Amino acid sequence: MLLGVNIDHVATLRNARGGSEPNVIKAAEICENNGGTSITTHLREDRRHIKDEDVRTLIKTIKTKLNLEMAMADDIQKIALEIKPHSICLVPEKRQEITTEGGLDVAGQIERVTNFIKPLIDADIIVSLFIDPDTKQVEAAAKTGAQFIEMHTGRYSEAYGTKNEEEEFQNLKHASELAHKLGLKVNAGHGLNYENVHRMHEIPGLYELNIGHSIISRAVFTGLANAVREMADLIK
Ligand code: PXP
Image 1 (cartoon, rainbow, N blue to C red):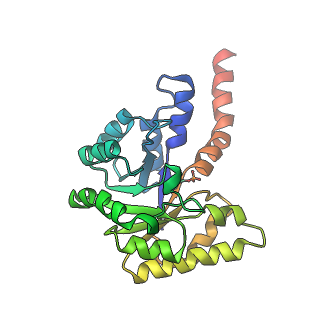
Image 2 (tube, protein in one colour):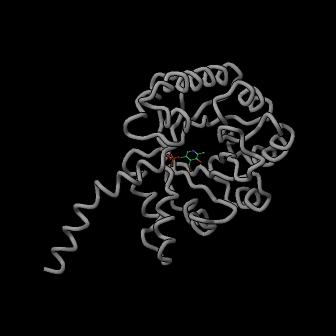
């Protein structure tokens, strides 16, 4: 199973101060040098973390693959067609595009999704749809021409360690089985962390996990001791 690292939160921290620290390009390089098999960034319509110039630079510097998360917005589609990431993952941003559980509502707008992703597929960009592990959504995704789904693991992650964990996990397993039967490849992500990620190995054929928040959060603590020590040494 491959690991796509979502570096949006590095940009969130950078934007808190303006300027360029912590540097998103450097963060991507560190992820790639330490087992990350792709770099994921979400170019949001409100540009709250990743900016246009980040993806324009990343596409030139990344040695693995750039996976661009994006909404069904024409201006973002234009950027994707221009920079040509390895893959895009279509995610909901507007309230009416979101299912009850949080993935993209493909079943409610198959034609719109199909038409939106066609130019991207025609441009040889791999297209993934971020959906709930739900039969209806998986069947709809298979009709759009997308090659991948990314299963939303948020409900599983929240239920981990509770009485609902098994049910949420089985939803993921069944959705993945169905997707594979329908010829889709399957990624997963959202809310996965150092405690709950191990069960992803129980889902046969999962291709890549996209993980952001838990990795960046962990990095604060695995890096904090060194950072303080370096500063203490400097001011001694
Ligand atoms: N996959 C998708 C489609 C996402 O939108 C996100 C969150 O940006 C992730 C994976 C990563 O989620 P997390 O930051 O909770 O690991």
